[in-house]
Amino acid sequence: MMKLGALDRLGLPGVVGAGLLLFCVAFYFGTIAPAQEELANLAAEKAQLAAAQAGAHHARAAPVQALPSFAQAPELLKQLNALAEKHGVVVTRSSYQVKSTDGTRRFEIDMPLKIAYPLLRAYLRDALALSPTASLDDLNLQRAQATDPAVDADVRLSFSFAAVP
Image 1 (cartoon, helix red, strand yellow):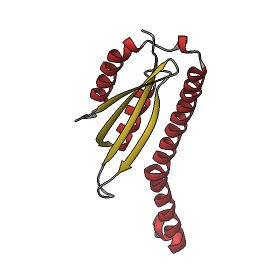
Image 2: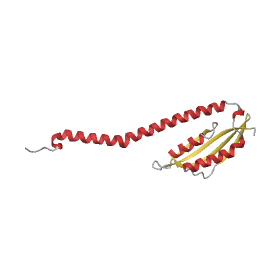
Image 3: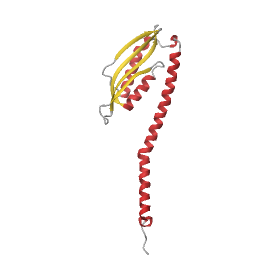
Image 4: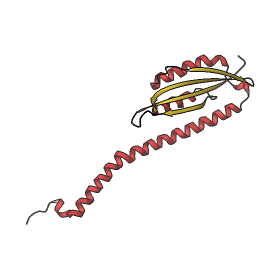
């Protein structure tokens, strides 16, 4: 009596089914699982940003006396530069503007950046965490080509300070 091979016993439908099963397993671990992990990371980042936004809203509603002193602005710039270095952001130029209203000073920083989008998100998240009064006022993104990994971003961050030293 001859032994039949496993493929002969399965027949054509069984071989096709086994091939589809292997394809599905490879597709799941190659595509679906990494996407689920990225989705979980984005959900965690969304929750973190919502908490930071709630804290910033609370800080904006706080009296002027609770705002940090404008004398802390140079230290804030040092921290922004350290974050840029940490995230690989090259700031070729930036412009600063101070606006005073109702006993507060709003320190606005405009920066054109060319950076990979995930690094930009990480940099902005950390920059907004520097102060409870930080806000992202403007963000314009542009990509030269769809395959280009870096985006051209025009970013305006602002920080509120007490006008009194």
